[in-house]
Length: 118
Image (cartoon, rainbow, N blue to C red; front, side, top):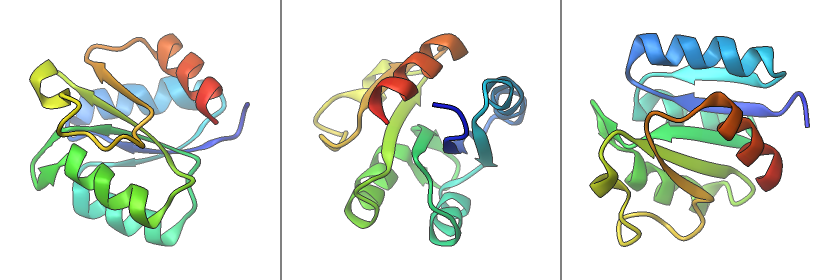
């Protein structure tokens, strides 16, 4: 499914840029943001099919943001990623989140997952 709109929330600038390049090459319309507040602003301005969100962020917690977003945007498919597996425990993550992945994650795996859940 090419052309899917993807909100990419990643605070590491180098990783964010690499993901933008690679996911754009696969046909996704990637909207990169660096913090929770930028993500909130983006979802009010644009409809996204998918969100790939880091958990540990400078201005908040991606799991908490996911809980907030699933209530307001029930069609948004959210994938959480963290370099720390303990950040992804199911008691912290809303059941509506489609996947919790430990970094690093290959772009091929992300593409397969995204195509499966949308």
